[in-house]
Length: 134
Picture (cartoon, rainbow, N blue to C red):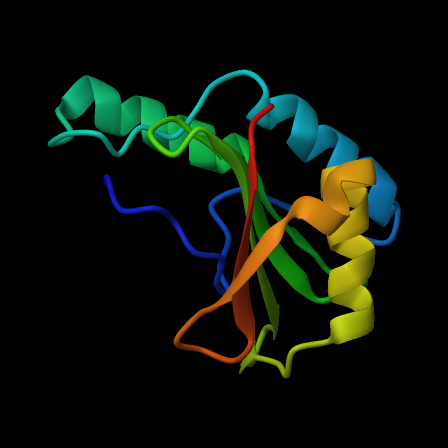
């Protein structure tokens, strides 16, 4: 598991309902992201694979009210923060929602949101964003 993870309809992390606001989920994921980094630098041995798996579980969530599956982690090799957003429900992918995405990106990146660089994925319901570490 050394390839950078991309959010999808299924999450490795927690499934959160309406008792979790976007700012609260973002705060949780930012806090968890600060405790480690995704390491894709070399072939992944058992210990590194387990550490990456644990880290991605802590850095991902599905937020049911906004229908967003997301990942927020640090990438060790690229020395950046990384967010992957996917709009989905139990039936699969949903169309990209620009307004909800912007709400999430502002909550995740805070005042640095304008510096976050976005990339489209192969799936139009999924996008990745990076922000170079200062």
